[in-house]
Image (cartoon, rainbow, N blue to C red; front, side):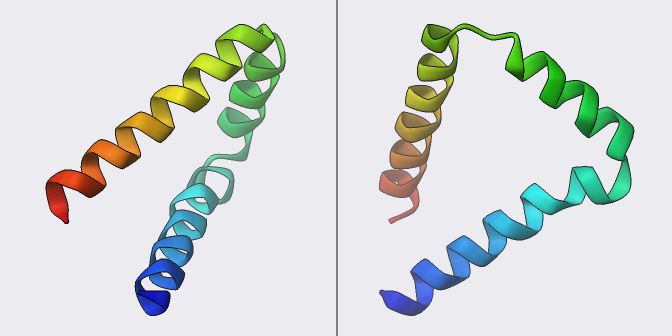
Length: 61
């Protein structure tokens, strides 16, 4: 279980690092747009990510 968790975290870090590495201007624009979102919109996206991740985990696990 511990190895799988570390592998998942490593994969997230790789995926999250791709956009700023490949296209920093686009990443900066996306980040600026994210700063304009309301707290409710950010919470909704976070909740959708959690639910989507749990659903994927249940389907694959």
